[in-house]
Image (cartoon, rainbow, N blue to C red):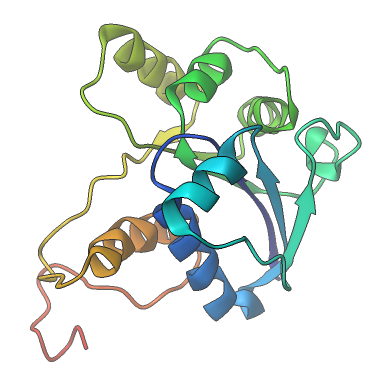
Length: 192
């Protein structure tokens, strides 16, 4: 059985994480029936500024506007089982942590939490204030997963993209999707 997931992109710096996430999703699209995509108000501006390119909504992506509360995943009756917010701004994280559903991103996140489905937030912020940490705690206690955009270096990445891939592969593994990725404890030849 294939899956339906939601990916939201907010205006936090780190559009490269979302870009590589979409690239990896295209590589494993046979595992997915649908990937709904939502950009926050300024996410496209940040994307254009940081990546100097436009998002291409090719299969399996279906883009929804941030104020489209008729999107199927705005309701618990839909069969979307996972939501990834990458990168996740601290403003969006704070609204989710406090139950403020003022756009499609925060409403869909609220649905994932109330229906006990998988919600993965990928914050890219440093340093963290106590407010940020408390909001992460609230989301975690509500059942969400906080996966900070912090690369690992076990695989000895040689480029920024390879370092970002370490986070993206972790996100996909947390989502329950099958993707080949570096695994600690395996020899270099086994990780090829």
